[in-house]
Length: 115
Image (cartoon, one colour):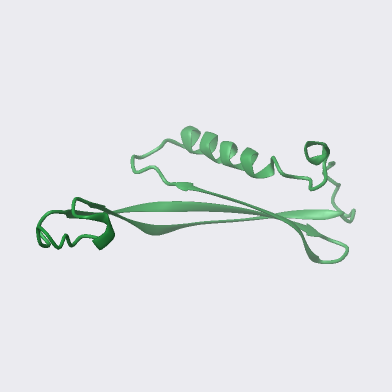
């Protein structure tokens, strides 16, 4: 693929979207599994429930056919956003890693898809 000069019409354009949303993780321990947290032999006191929250980040890469003005391909990557502060270099490495994983399936029908 070649970046076109200003004034030339592209075959396709790349549009990216990114976002973060809070997710909840619930873990239950103890009690009889068939009855969830309530064990009919020991009552509701045998287990515990742990709730934690984390942030999940998503990166969407859209390839738009510029002639037809329609979506040709979409790749999506998600991952847990690290809680500790990252420096700009560390964040860029993570973004590059996720982008490479998403683009591993592009272009559709490319050499990696031929058998």
